[in-house]
Length: 328
Image 1 (tube, rainbow, N blue to C red):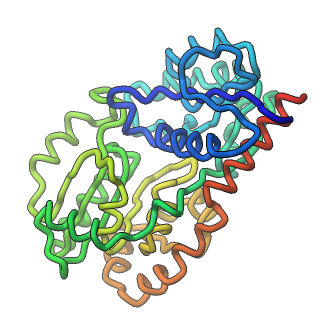
Image 2 (image 1 turned 180 degrees about the horizontal axis):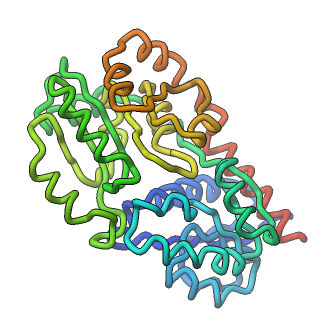
């Protein structure tokens, strides 16, 4: 079918810009907009769209959904499992997921664990698994940006930098990150990201207090628009998250040729396999951070692994699904 009309909708205002699904939606939107045979628009009223692709399901998105006349698709970026230790009132919010999911014609999941969780909740709703994609043209190491980021934050070129990119919540492993910074004071630890839900974020008061008490070896740049800069400035990427539906920041780090150390959880094994290093305890993580041989081996194949997640291919898979649903 030629000329399918698609509208993207995501709530990306205020502090919601820190939520990864907004970034994912924009990346996918830009790539699909470059393809032939599709007319794509961003947000606004559903209008005459053949299909509306939602990436969030907050109040504004659900109001927009009520006005939709075309097919409605939701990408399940978040599931009940990843809300725990991420947002206040998570258990109350999680109870609403099945009802919300059933308001859409089709759900896109982004990994097998995500698929399993969604189909268990709403076995009556059609599901298609399409992983997140990474813009490999954008996400690659840039030595000029490396130098500029280090100069901005006073990091010497020969200083080893451990980077994490995530929301400031317990679920993302922030407390483990801080513990490692204390265990390895000779290295610089950088955490890029903000509170995903403002004061409603889990442990908001405690985390703000801990940020003020960190020593000079820990840097919080906050929200960084030019995200390739910290990736380029880092020597390794550390992902201590306890639960994810995908873990896009790992893919971005790999695309920038960084070795990755991540928590030993099933979702990371499912997506990244043996292409990253895994830890089970803080002592494991500290040992890996100091293991230059294993880090170098991991970095050697990092970027090549991301080729099958190239956003150009992922966009084509989305477009094929759009056409299938509109033609049905």
